[in-house]
Image 1 (cartoon, helix red, strand yellow):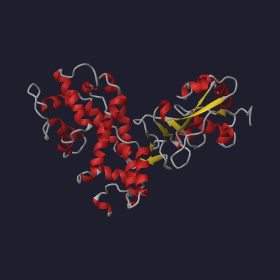
Image 2 (cartoon, one colour):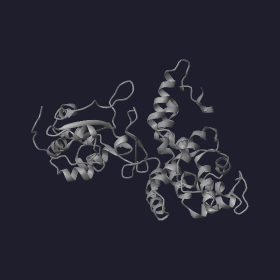
Image 3 (cartoon, helix red, strand yellow):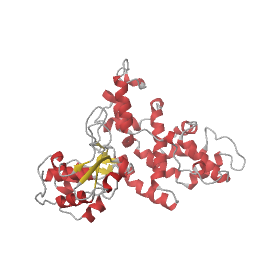
Image 4 (cartoon, helix red, strand yellow):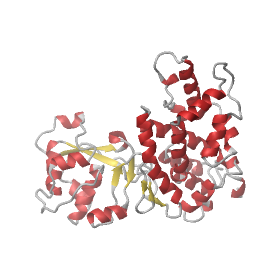
Length: 377
């Protein structure tokens, strides 16, 4: 066991997981990560995927002695590590009683400090000189590496890809740049940007599940084939899961901007009959204008008839607030409240379901999932 390693500086990357930093430190000293991790006493085992395999989003919590040890290995001040690593100061009852010896505890990153994604290896190489894997805490609205044209994937799924190539999809990169202005508008409107994004993503993800029947939808199939390397047809269902968030990102940003636009809220109010309440029409001005803003004039009637979806729920909250009929503060009159049943499935969860369905007897080539007419199934 190495007690006092030779000091080689390893700077932490912003929002990096502590586990990722330990792996980079090990590489710096020319050893396997599991050898370096033997310097700590562990109170549990690393989290793994169903059926085996280490999780890329595994995170570690360290006691005070453990943090001092890692800081010494990095050649960095603890304050620097605390500023860069979101999990650095995370507490756990199993660590509070530990003094003296360096002790570590394994956790799943998503349960510690939010969504976890792979970092861009090219950006890592620019900062550290080594194009190694890095795992970072990254919200879902910051997944585009604008410099290198990459979509950075969730690290919690049992799949080999770290990124999708966006170099042929400038509209996705442009949407990342536009998101900054949407964030500012949300703040000015008194809304939390993350909640606005989550609602818009739920709206578009619901459309994504319905898009097999949209013969006039051409942008999403083109983008999906692009991120799949040219042709997603050989493994369409898997690519529909892995590529979804990247493919629909421009529409998510556009919908978020539309939901924050007071003029759009006025159209909802007018469609509801304003002072003379009526059922929302299938050809209402709001959904028609929303389709136009998305470059899909045909989408309006489809969106208007998606009863029970997150978009209709948002419209209902806007109408109740305008009528003053929402009652006390709560989710019914909170436009940005996203119900549990409206939250889109995660990539990790959907891949698990797909894998089980493909293994089921008689599942066929597509795991029992509904196939598009062009699939040949």
